[in-house]
Length: 241
Image (cartoon, rainbow, N blue to C red; front, side, top):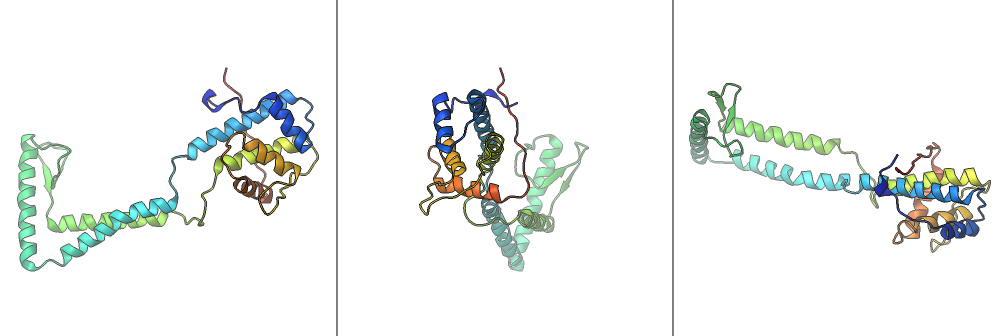
């Protein structure tokens, strides 16, 4: 059962009759058919909302590449320090860690403050980090970033998958096939104008949910739905009263 916020008055009785007449559909109960159309629209909104703020894998790769590149540069810069510069940095790290350890012992070390000590379970104890430790941590973080990027599956270039529209068309297919023996097919002109009754119904019915969607986008998902061999059952939804 879907939350009421996903339901809207998408189709009037006149809209439903017009869509059916244009596509040659003759449902036994027009009111029940309209109710199922509203269920399909609500399920679309629910599914679309789930995927609305999920970034594409290519965007995640680009985002993770920023700290990965900077870490690599930082590690290379540290490795390239002269002996004199490294000695000065090593001394600076030692003094900072010593100060942080004293602040930790006296309870004056802010938990969110940059520090070179790792508190232990015993409040009087901590582990101080030296320059070599920090370089190992930087290397470990860079490796973790690399693995995070490698775990992201590759995606085809082009427009991202519209999961809400895909589910809507799957549900409309089931509604169509339970209403008529007319084949659920997709034929369109070169200008993406629907030709077959099913294509005409899908384009016009969905545009009452998303008026700005181009025909080509709806027809592409319709084509994929027909091409898929595995049939997905329609999700049943009822408005909460």
